[in-house]
Image 1 (cartoon, each protein chain N blue to C red):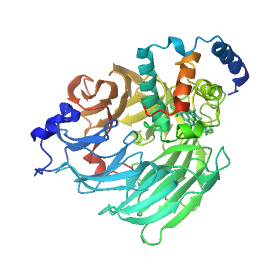
Image 2 (tube, rainbow over the protein chains, first blue to last red; image 1 turned 120 degrees about the horizontal axis):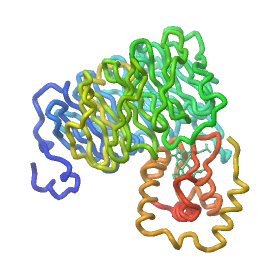
Image 3 (cartoon, rainbow over the protein chains, first blue to last red; image 1 turned 60 degrees about the vertical axis):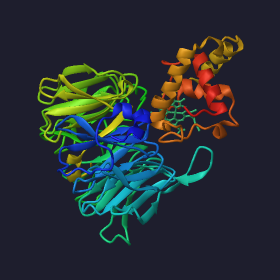
Image 4 (cartoon, protein in one colour; image 1 turned 30 degrees about the vertical axis):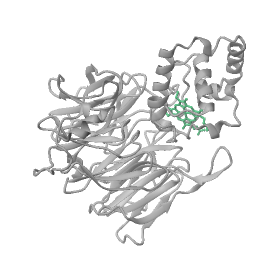
Length: 396
Length: 108
């Protein structure tokens, strides 16, 4: 460690290599944890349960997400300020960084690993970059809308994911659309636009097999379902009945649909405006059950073997995590982590789950069988946790 | 969901007129409200309030707004949109104090 670095407050949280020496090892048991307030991240070792590097200078990470190159060496981090940063996790350093829009929300990597797509709030739209050097390849502006003040602007784009066939799918919040962008020829994107998919899609996901693209709707009951095997058929609304006739509760943080929780042929989804997790049969998209939970669910994530679903919650219930047994649909554990349990990530085969606890400045690692706290890592205002096992999963 | 703005205006107007609003917000509570602004409002408006799913909460946006309008939006939300009512977590006085900070321009 260089003595000079000791002056930065961040180092209080970190003990590992100086950025100069690169590691010689596989990355399969590595990951990153976003430090949302400091605009930095920590590279972690999920076997040793320790930090390896701290990387600074990533801009506004208040709502950051990340994807991995298929060799598991590079993480691409999407920040709220429109920044896209390519980080070499073996060397703990930034390779390239571009600030591509005023305000962005998330990104995806293409099936072949060559393209990085970013969705933007401001100005709305999707930009596609080379995964190599982050040079711009395509710029697809969003549908124009008139905002509350009568000003013309682009619809916000949300729920951007990759899909088989070198495609990306994205939803448009203000204009209620879903687009499928095919990038087989990078110089000539082919865009299929579906209009009127439902009111105010706020996030979306793709099923792990890459077949179904599902957008959560804030402005109406149900979710919008697009079958990517049949792009000729427009999306339809599923789970239309859910929430009907019930008072919608206020939502203090929007649920995230990333991380499709599948257990057998059932999917688990966060309800919006109801303190429930919805259980859906995947064959015909019929609701087969609901699990009452502690608050507005934000992330509903299945342990890789599908036996448990872990749920975190929106303000003011973000000090709690609940675990649902997927066989009995019973909440088997309620954990109090401390305030600001923002994100969860399972180890690749699920024996552990890492949980960010913002107000405690720590990541807590639980054994998923005993549900006991095993380790704590000091991290400055941690939010998203992303392990390299995502590199080979569609939609993550 | 139905909007209850008229009653709210009345309640707030009374509180405001009684002159007891910002006086009683302790420094500790002020720090809590700023923490709320940064992290919880921030989850939709951006931690630096530069916008997200919700619009940027910056002074230039609010030049034509009066404090009441701003405080009411915070307390009662905007039905039909994701902007939730903060009534359960903020008193009228606290919302008024926060509205004043936002109108002045604040970087939490």
